[in-house]
Amino acid sequence: MNAKVWLIGAGPGDPELLTLKAVRALHEAEVVLIDDLVNPAVLEHCPTARIVKVGKRGGCRSTPQAFIHRLMLRYARQGKVVARLKGGDPCIFGRGGEEAEWLAARGVQAEIVNGITAGLAGATLSGISLTHRGIARGVTLVTAHTQDDSTLNWQALAQSGTTLVVYMGVARLQDVQQGLLEGGLPASTPVAMIENASLPQQREGRSTLADLQIDAALFQLKSPAILVIGDVVGASFVQSTPLCEPLSHFG
Ligand code: SAH
Image (cartoon, rainbow, N blue to C red):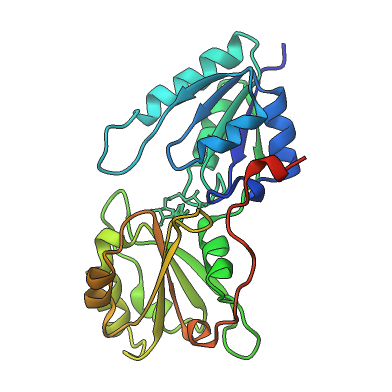
């Protein structure tokens, strides 16, 4: 028997940002393990599957990673088609690689289906073109939260000439601000704060590196949110794509 697990990126929230491949895999799935950043509306694509919630949200009650691993393995070994649904992209701060490695070591093949990561969707939906020609030579995705509390090389990031997209930064604004200022990024560098990207409750705030903490407090910035830091934020286009259309429009 060829046991297999789909590791599927569900995108940032808007169910219309799912890929066609994700939809197909969901249709096939008999058991779906769903993370809590995933919009439950996507479950419309697997109406008969058993749904297992395995939320792991920072600071909240959580399902230990080891338990999730074992659960996937157990269902896969029972011969079930297992889908693991993760927010955004499975391999961008999503442990997709770890899970695939763990399964492979036990003879279970994982197939990863990309999702649109929150940082990319959030920027676009907020009218920011992350690698706008003539302004940014690239984009760097970083997390402000590390498991071992190691620090980022802020100086290298500040001097990279790339737009910075910071995940999991809400509780670490001081580190981000201080690290980048000390690393040499100008205090006037524009920053966008994008909360709940692609969902109807999406909120966006603008600030500068100098005022980031104070503006985030005024804005009452809450997780899940990303920060986009760099001059491209000051050159925003006007975004007109409607947010989160009802899923019934989806074929
Ligand atoms: N794999 C996910 C990231 C998981 S880490 C992805 O590719 O998007 C969790 C962090 O992602 C959150 O702390 C937040 O920084 C970001 N995030 C996830 N969904 C988000 C959303 N809808 N809006 C803004 N940020 C989001």
